[in-house]
Image (tube, rainbow, N blue to C red; front, side):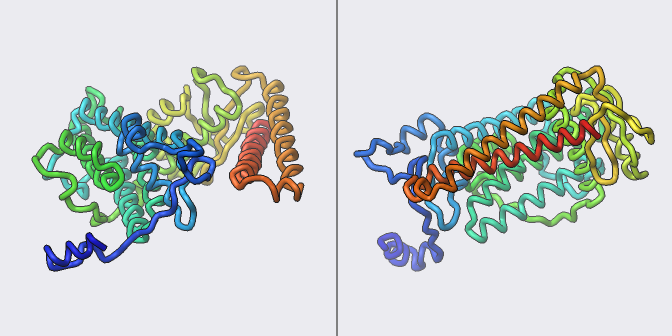
Length: 384
């Protein structure tokens, strides 16, 4: 009320027209914070330990409508790690000469990888904007987190390494550097409402034109996304992810270079495999990628679009031992579900247990169900 009256008196206008009421901030178990319980999280001490941006991002991320916030220091630590990831990504860009170019027009990008990330950047900006307009700060932070950590850091920066390598095409390298700096700038804009300090600092380092990030225009999608480039690179990421999942689920040694056979590939898929052969082999740790029509035994399989991915594993792992391990793991998670079901079917337990304990049991069952699905898929692929 005081802010409203002072705004009208001194400025002749109301200072705000919309008020967002956030939920109560509780401790990690859902208990109300109080000195007597000793469960108060001191914001000043938390900021000293993890940083203001990490705390701010966490609170926004946990602001789900209709639910109180269960604040745990582990969640704040995760946000701190995210800030570190962003900082390191910016350092990588600087070390590789990705300098801001005010005259760069992303619509002129020619390389598939660059056209893909530009389209993904605009899509992310649209998603974050829509969530902010709807006051879904939790979904907005999730969207920008996924884009920064997964799309930009885990995929795009890896894709750029061969493009930026010495001895490569200088025109493509120059375009990639400009694109990377442009995408980083858009990321900082999207993150600024949630992490104002680190983004302002990085903006000064990356852009360095004397402007403040807080006064710059919000990213608006004015570029038509290249659907072909997006489809092509999304295929590559799905293929690499599928191979990685198989390797992890079947305990393939991290250093083992294995072969990939692709069966039933369309002409489009064949072209994509040839174009991105180097990056696929590097990121999936493959010794060779080739086409086949043969039936391959003792191999794991996965499907990406119309193509079947076949990974011959004979001599790489002990197949019988791996099948036995998978069966044992499945049985273990099935026992976990039985234990949870036994507890949750007990009306006396359900009526007396605190809500956080009930939520923990439901999460345990959901996790066990997910693990069984993954293990059964690995088992099926190995037997196929």
